[in-house]
Length: 174
Image 1: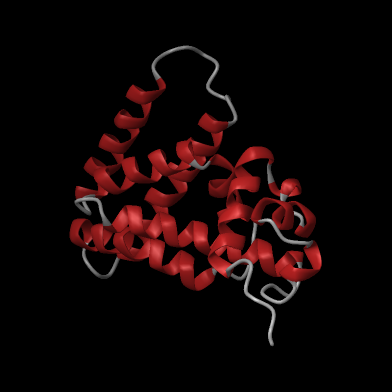
Image 2: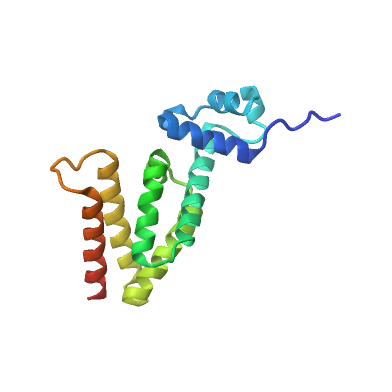
């Protein structure tokens, strides 16, 4: 009689995401994930090849989560940027992981699709990709600085984000 399934791949990935947020990428180990889902580490290898594969699965799930949140917005550029920022604040380590792991291109493409569509609406097909890259680069840079506590000159960071977003939209509208 085969042994009963004691954990599922979604449970393993959720455990990896929780460990990531609680202490960064170094916290994701096969042993830590196994403990979190209540199995012995060798049991994980039935579902996940190795730690690198686990990290990739965590990155893909994180990107899919982001894609869902962006798709649930009203899909305006401002709404997308605010959803992106909210996601980065809720999952700062996952946000950082999205830009540190190769291989999650399909999931990242799903996350990028609403931004590309919003850019297309603002600037047209010919420059949509350029505009989407501009907005994404600005927002990602802003969020990385914000999460690192790098805005040290005072002022209201929320207002600065809204100002930057407003200026970007105005510039793209031309």
